[in-house]
Every structure is written in C-alpha cells, then in structure tokens.
Image 1 (cartoon, rainbow, N blue to C red):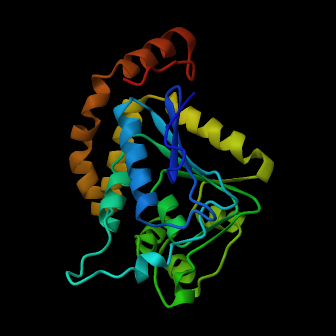
Image 2 (image 1 turned 135 degrees about the horizontal axis):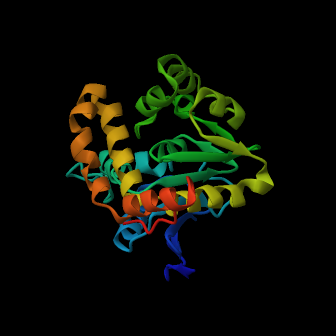
Length: 265
C-alpha cells in the first residue's frame, strides 16, 4: 500500500491495488473548507490518473465531518470582494460527480451540513449504526449551500428533503437507509471492513461498464429519462470494445455467471 508523503494534508491518499483510499484528516472534526474540498478533488483526479478503479472516502477522526468551517463565511474578502482561493461549490460538485469510477463513502460519528453534502456527491454511502446524519444549516439561519437540497430531492423525494433541510434534525442511519438517502448500515466495529469490502468489489468490477452506468444515471437524474435514452447508445459504446466484456462473456460460457475476473479495461 502506498501513501501520500504530505502527512499534514487535510486529505491523505493511499493506494491499495486497484483501490484508492482518501482519508479526511483535518482535526478536530473535519470541518469543511477550501483546502479539504481541494484535497478531495486532487485525490480523485490523482486516482483516475494512476488507473484506480474505485475510491473509498473515509475519516481518520472521531467524526466524518461536523459541517462547514464558519471561517469560510467570515473571512474578509478585501477591496476586490474576492473570496479566498479555492474551488467554487459548483467546481467541487462537478469534479466529484464527473469522476468516472465509483466512490464509496464510509460515515461514522457525525456527518452534518457540508459533510453530508460531500457524501451525497458520491455513489455509495455506508454508515456506522451509532452515526448521526443531518442537514443542520437551518439552525444557523442558513440553508445547505453545497447542493444538499437538490441531491436530497433526487434521492428521497421532495417531502423528505424539505423535512431534512428545513427542520435541521440529526437522524439515525437506519431511518435514512429506509428513506433511500444512504445505502447500508452496519455495526460500528464492522464499518471499516464492510466499507473496504464494497469498495474493493467496485474496484474489481468491469470499470468501463460502471463508468458508463455512472454517466447514464447522472444524465437521467439531471436531464430526464428521454435525454438518457437519446444518449444511451453513445455512452455505452465503449463497453462493446472493452476487454472486460470479452472476459465476462468468455467466463460465462466456460464457468457460468459471476466467475469473471475483470482487468478494468
């Protein structure tokens, strides 16, 4: 396993075979600010560049993230009115959601506000049973400003999304799994192993196919089913040229379903 050399970075990067692990490490609570967002973006682009086939996003601290660093809203902008250097919200959202490989998020402790909004940009969310998750910005007189409202609507519908963002409650993960906001809940002592297992399952899958599926699902969510239908053949074209398809078909004919070992190309 390789690890990034910058131990002081807010996001640590490790390579484990076809999997890249991004670990949030901005004490004490992984409060969201520009360097954390940039670290995630850099970690994802680096993972793609090195040929990783999936990413696991987790925390090294007591909490996944306790929300946004309020200093983001209080820093003086100077005479020009310019904000501090760092990615804009839309740049961050686009960078994460356009990443062509699956991203798994493992949540423990609290995952609030901007921390939840980060998680909602990813493909699969697994949470520890004791974790507490919520959009709490309203308690400060704010609203989710990193796309949380619209991504909640996408996952759990209008009524529940308004409940989450307008009441600012902290929810147990079982409730949010039942609503469809997150994918899975496990006992606290099982989180690390379960998150790694699902991330490695993605990493060992047919990467071209999963990339196509991500792109098609995003298009359907953003522009509707008709737009996805119109683009489907083009988005799925790389699958037909992939070695993984040949491997999958050959394995199916010789050994039956579920036995293929994909190379990710």
